[in-house]
Every structure is written in C-alpha cells, then in structure tokens.
Length: 175
Image (cartoon, rainbow, N blue to C red):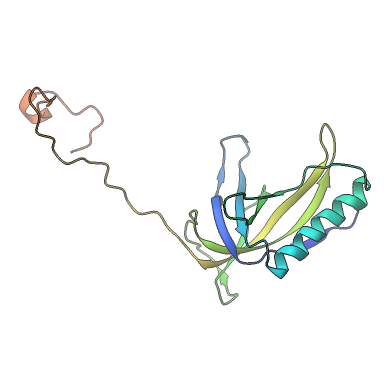
C-alpha cells in the first residue's frame, strides 16, 4: 500500500518525548507524543477520514483495526497518538528549520508532519509516524522549589544539620 502523508492542525502536546527518546517501554527508545486537536477543525476531520480510509483499504470494511486516535470525553478534542524511532526535524512558527530545538513539554502548541502506515500480526491497526514538528509555542519546565515552609508544632521532627551532627552529607549536596 502506498504511503499516506499527513499534516495535523495545531494542537496541544500531551506527554511529549520529541527532543529526546523515551526508553520506558522500548529499550531502543522512541520519540512520541499525543496531540490534542479540536474535533471540529477541518484539518482534523480530513485527517480522521484519511486514517479511516487507509484502514478500510488495507483491512476491509468489516475489520475493526486499532486506530491512533480517540475522543477526549472531557474536552471533546481528538487525541492523536504519534510515534517515531527517529528524532524528528524541527521548525519554528515561521517554517524555518531549528537546529537546536527547546525541550518540548506538555501544553506546547505544535503541528506534526508525518506518514501513516498499517500493521498486522496479533493486532491490526494504523500508526502515525512523526517526521517533522513545527513549534508554535514551546512550554518549558521550570526548576521546582521542593522545599516547605517551617511548621511549628510541639514534638515535631527536626533533624540536626549535618554540620551540627558531625555527619557527612552522603550525596555531596549542600542544602
């Protein structure tokens, strides 16, 4: 079957691993993200139709293949599942190539260009593969302050500082 290319509408990245691979369930690592896109968007509707037609052509009308999207009951958006074994190419909002992309966090507004392919074996379905990512707005993590304000309670636990106790800080960090 011929390769089918696609471009998503601008959507919100959900659990993205786009600038470095995720090794949690794949020892070789994979780049992936979910992309939440408006269900009523013309580009979304065209993409969903493309996916369904691609599955129908490959597996027939009666087949029930696994499709790489679902509708979010809370927002009504379509959530696409996209993946790649290879690091995608990055572009900025103006379409210029980006050689050193920022780390993309959830909530970033992005668009993805790729191709879809079917698979069969123990399961049948359609996969959406990432070739390129256009960064519209990049949400990046900020350092967190994991400290707490002091709590004044009788019999509260208070550790002697390492300096006061004569013990060494085992991890070498100064707090």
